[in-house]
Image 1 (cartoon, rainbow, N blue to C red):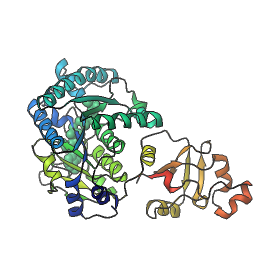
Image 2: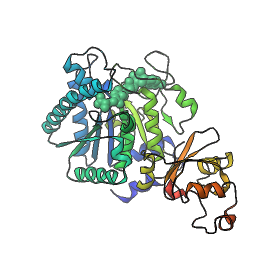
Image 3: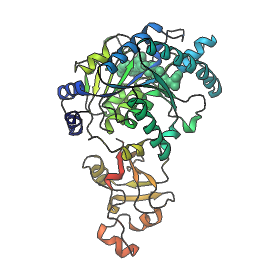
Image 4: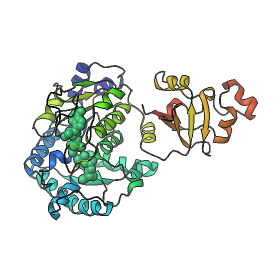
Amino acid sequence: MPACNRVIFERVTALTERECREALQQARRLVVKVGTSTLTHKTGKLNLERMERLVRELVDQVNAGRQVVLVTSGAVGAGMGRLGLKEKPRTLPEKQAAAAVGQGLLMHMYEKFFSDYGLLVAQVLLTRDDLADRRRYLNSRHTLATLLHLGVVPVVNENDTVAVDEIRVGDNDTLSALVAGLVDADILILLTDTGGLFTANPCNHKDASLLHCVTEITPEIEALAGGAGSTWSTGGMATKLQAARLATSFGIPVVITSGLEGGRISAVLRGEEVGTIFIPREHRTHTRKRWLAYGPAAQGQVQVDGGAVRAICQGGKSLLPGGVVAVYGDFDQGAIISIIDPDGKEIARGMSNYAAAAIRRIQGRKTKEIVEILGYKDYDEIVHRDNMIVLV
Ligand SMILES: Nc1ncnc2c1ncn2[C@@H]1O[C@H](COP(=O)(O)OP(=O)(O)O)[C@@H](O)[C@H]1O
Ligand SMILES: N[C@@H](CCC(=O)OP(=O)(O)O)C(=O)O
């Protein structure tokens, strides 16, 4: 990628909508997520016309010199359609059985359509565990990078057949944001059955209007998002906002737009005002920081006061002992811990420079007192900013 493209995305602090959209013209690596609502008919069976059009549009982007990762839903829906089931399965084994049937169907069609247009595809099935474990995370990253280097389009889905609740990402919107971070994408495009984020669910509110640009996902924005629109979908707009929050926290812009109408991907990449764009506030984060958000289970929690919340969330600062009011759990130095606000909400996650027992002794105290209290001082900070990801 030419250096100038990176500069545009890396200097992000508060880009205007226009600047951000124009920068998308230089995006080189795309993650495109397509929902069940786009890929299937109401019967749950695959909508081949839309699928083929999507593939053609993606191949065009590859032909134009871009790299594409496709995150696809539709396995459960397609499996249900093929099995002739009328209702969405309720139990996990039923969903897994449907996904096992549907995933094969999905890949068969992708393989056919992509090869019709001259490209190879590779199936990549992931669970949260694959991303939470540092070694598997790096392994997945290398595999995807190699596939992209070879000109292959990775087609990613959650490994529904084996993923039980504890190791599931749970929805493909979130999965796509994790994948965007994993491959260091320049943009995440979420294709769905509405034109973007509306002021209310447009299926029930005909007068709802489209929001063109979101610079911050506030509680008011979250309140606009309702649940899934189609029988076979998961999460609705709420999980898309969650995905947008995650990807923008990595420094990656996100556009939610319609997968029902063709041409949206190329319009987004021409910098046109389509869909809803979410502008990243953070600089591109280092991959190690991203991995922290991927779900390595936190081994403990430190609760901080309002001043520390502001310093971390608005001031871009590290966590010092003075801001800590409580420590929960028993963890060692180097553990991944959650930083929670006075209401118990997780605001950040990071690697602790001290064990829980040591933090309990220095909490609320000044940095210069650490050596006096502990008899040593390895670090000034409990969690250094470089080892912390802010989640709000
Ligand atoms: N504020 C909103 N703006 C747009 N769509 C919304 C909103 N609130 C809820 N929705 C619902 O979200 C649905 C899209 O999510 P979902 O059904 O999960 O689709 P997909 O299968 O594409 O992921 C829309 O069909 C719509 O019913
Ligand atoms: N992994 C599931 C997709 C779950 C999901 O998030 O669906 P959707 O809301 O349509 O993106 C499947 O392939 O059916």
